Image (cartoon, rainbow, N blue to C red; front, top):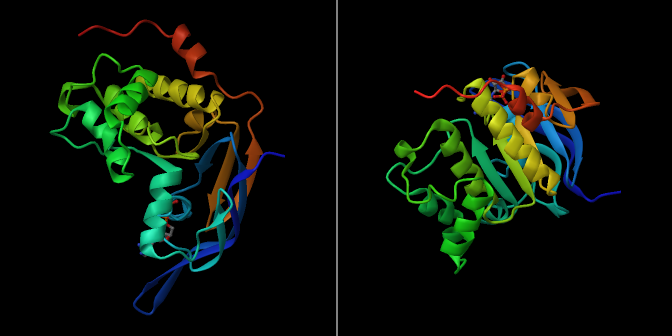
Length: 245
Ligand code: ADP
């Protein structure tokens, strides 16, 4: 049995709005083992973002327990939570969230700066090479395509060697071909042992993962194994070559 990277027990989250209480999560028990590749799905308002914010240590639950790589993080204070977040988690967002006037290399160095690491430039270069951007390190985000910007963001997410990569709709702003390229990269990282969890509302994106967890009304309503996940690299090989503008 592989060790659990994520283990939640009876996780709840309530938002109080005046006299109104929104029960965003109503008791979620999820275990995700090291090396899994999981999609989180569900209709709008089902609790996906709330769940991701909790497992990403961006917020604290109202009740229940959450163990991240064996550490009880549900009741940590803000500083400890931030430290855990930097050490254990790499984030990838729909809108890339890169610093605009900063080179790819410097963007990727940033988490290392926060972590007080010394050989930043060397490690950031390696991460950029790993995502296929070894030739673009000195480019700023506006000199890169959307897919390349997302690669920079993925390099930034992996540069600290986190136990977990969390993606919030990482292909939401990309065209079909580029989405497959990004999914191929996630699959490659997962094959190398990284645990990856993505929120997506696109079924065909979710089918690249090994497991799909579906939320509805703040609860898990389905947790399924994907029998033969789509291989993004094979799909790419079967697509016509990209049009050159
Ligand atoms: P999803 O990501 O699946 O769309 P959310 O986690 O964003 O779902 O939302 C779950 C429920 O919690 C919704 O009813 C939403 O309106 C509510 N909610 C989310 N964030 C907040 C907040 N900061 N304050 C109040 N209610 C919130």
